Length: 296
Image 1 (cartoon, rainbow, N blue to C red):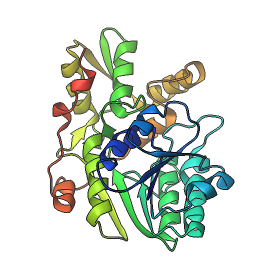
Image 2 (image 1 turned 135 degrees about the horizontal axis):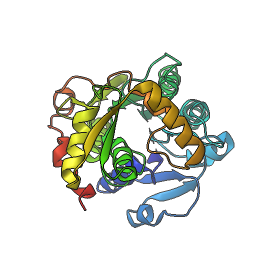
Image 3 (image 1 turned 180 degrees about the vertical axis):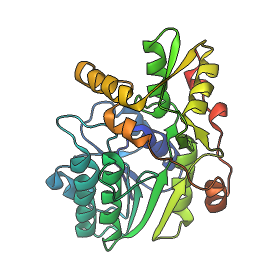
Image 4 (image 1 turned 90 degrees about the vertical axis):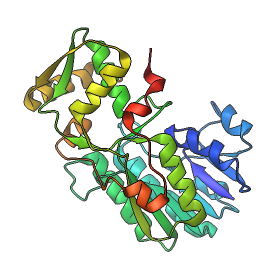
């Protein structure tokens, strides 16, 4: 039996239907029973629990052979911090998995996971990785670059769209716009997980990305083209951008970009272009081929 933490999340909502086609039984860890109809339709058992509550994980993990741990946050709120969810939450489910006799642990991290605390999100993902590595579980770690696809309101692409809709005539570009990414389609991420589940080598860390390295500005150009918009790009110096972002964070519940995300633009988010093809035997979808879901 496989436990998927975060089954109602972005990757999880694409993964569970794929797992349902196998002979494995699926149990999903959910914080509440709301919005779980799709999981039930695919035959998944539901276990109510929260990775920040160790006590709630014990029953959920009974009889489980493999955990696919997808729960994470990319934006903090008053009730959920990077340290509390991405790091301590991972520790809680790893310890509960060890106590329950789980054999295998597949962990979703992020490309750029780093011991540098300046980058708070990727630092928390690195902390989660270290917890998994130091366990006695057979593990596989995935580090995807920016994931795109339908069903996630906080992705890089969605943030770009929100920024474009805020300004009717311009397309703001933070700094030089040359920070590079390797956007990967969510269904290709799922294919990598399923492949690793079936034949992956334990103890491996897989860095995965799409078939192209694209700068922030090139990704923005692609989104503008797909949306059929006309925009004049305006490069905004990073110091000015920081001030604007702080103002948006104080006045908006869902700003197009946060201070943490802006800081991440200082570093590239790429790996080898053939990473998926070399490790999993297929060529991932390019960004401009996978954006039909954002078309008007």
